[in-house]
Image (cartoon, rainbow, N blue to C red; front, top):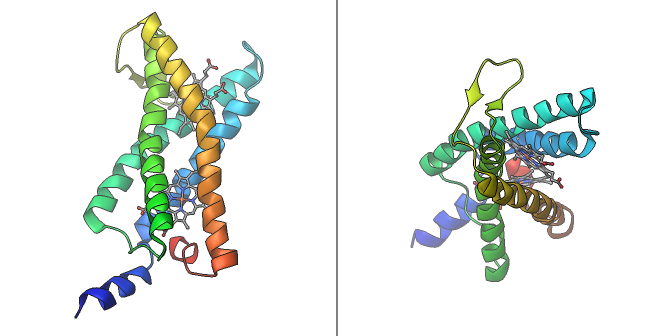
Length: 181
Ligand code: HEM
Ligand code: HEM
């Protein structure tokens, strides 16, 4: 008797404040990481130095916040699916899973790329050198290709996810977007 009402009640719940905070701060940092790498400028220029540092900082912060975000998600869960259509509900879960993987895998690939190139990851202004692995030219090529490929592919995945959110709000007129704000 209680199963259906409980599920529909959960669907009208909002994401918790920390979940909303993690979502949007990570969105801003990812946007800035993309922006920085696109405008970094030619090799050896001061602009490249500055924007590469912004890229490393944003990416590393994404990874750190991703850990806290997933712990919070595992502890507190999320509201129930809004989509009544099973195919759409499946697709949205698949895209969310891909996005969760992305916020771990992409920064890690970036760090591994730098480390296998023979350098520590240094975050400007902070005295830390992050070295996860030693130099390895073959692995560097792999990590580089994977970072570039995934970085470019996720313009599309993120775009699809954002379009779906806006579609829910403007076309289906449900509270999908509102409960993440
Ligand atoms: C979510 C975080 C990140 C995103 C979305 C991201 C995305 C990208 C993209 C789109 C590119 C350019 C690919 C191209 O040339 O078309 C790139 C390049 C690069 N990224 Fe990241 N990245 C992230 C995190 C990191 C981190 C944490 C590091 C290292 C600390 C890093 C290091 C690099 C480096 C060194 C390049 C230049 C590669 C080259 O041109 O040789 N990235 N990244
Ligand atoms: C930059 C990259 C983004 C990443 C990595 C990302 C990641 C995620 C993830 C992992 C979830 C699932 C949350 C959970 O159930 O625990 C989610 C949900 C959501 N995202 Fe994003 N997101 C991004 C950008 C955006 C943008 C630009 C928008 C809006 C235009 C948006 C709107 C939403 C909404 C409304 C939900 C809730 C969906 C639902 O309740 O079914 N996201 N996002």
